[in-house]
Length: 142
Image (tube, rainbow, N blue to C red; front, side, top):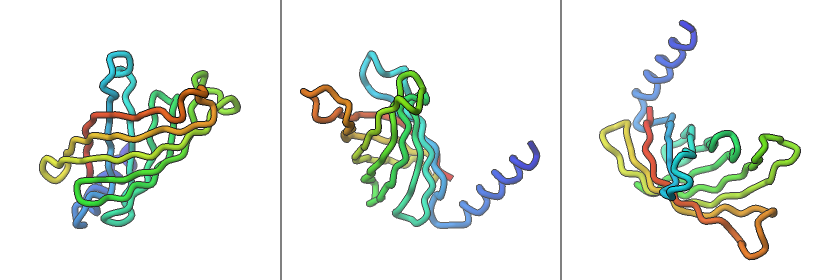
């Protein structure tokens, strides 16, 4: 436990010495009454000031990796992942996402975000070419 705390303190110290937040955790909710209890939890690692990679999950059912390009307060992201209602990786559906995000910072570390985009998958009903994504959330970068 002491080792994990020491590593987190060192990572925080290194990231404060740089001019941008290298790590970011966020949580976002879909503003639909049926879906607000299913948060999307994400971790992002910025390898440059404008480029980041990350992982997000919605209750372990929808999991995806994404590349994000930051342009000021806006972010464009493309991701690949899988969805499995019964948590069986062999029966999972591959999915692709394209999103645009607006982030508003509060101080150096906290931010809110608005995400809009689309999810594409091969197993969608024939009358749905894609599923819209709309999320509201907040995050912490360090």
